[in-house]
Length: 111
Length: 119
Image (cartoon, rainbow over all chains, first blue to last red):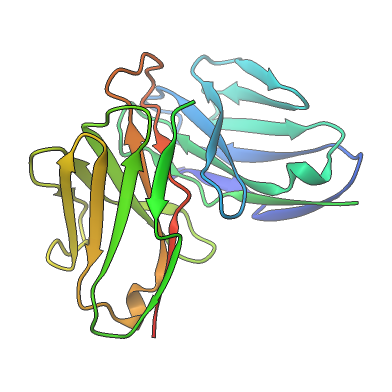
């Protein structure tokens, strides 16, 4: 993988269901991976900064894991709520302000 | 947390006119700010790095005479799209790095973005 890639591009989730999606990145020269939550008309909000292989971070119903050896990070949403509807961006993985963004996964939670 | 504002949030202009977008760090100083552009269903692409008191650093393929950047103070960077054309229509978003931030890991704080439509 040469760039940061996110999949799927979009997904629809029924309220109360759990979901997860992926950020893939080049596994060489890893420094940090950032996850952001971006609601329409608002600023992207930092969720997590992942730095260590095997890292697992949690914020409320949202959690993320990191595998630097194979170059991926998962973001999980447990018991999705309508307010979780947003685009989730990942950014990384090198120590460079020009960190690459993935194209995002847009999550729509249906009531 | 740190707040970055952008103004305007959306703008519609005629082809050939120039449009200025402001990016402000509201509660912190930012020697370095970044300007991104997003095309539909694509990633945020870094256009340029704005440095207070010096010239901006443009990414490959970004015309510096087309996208003028001025970072006149520690809290304000402006992006001017000169002689705008319909192909410049896009979503522009800025970010800022807190000079005194201790979070490390190249943490940046983002503005809400500006939607530019050129008719």
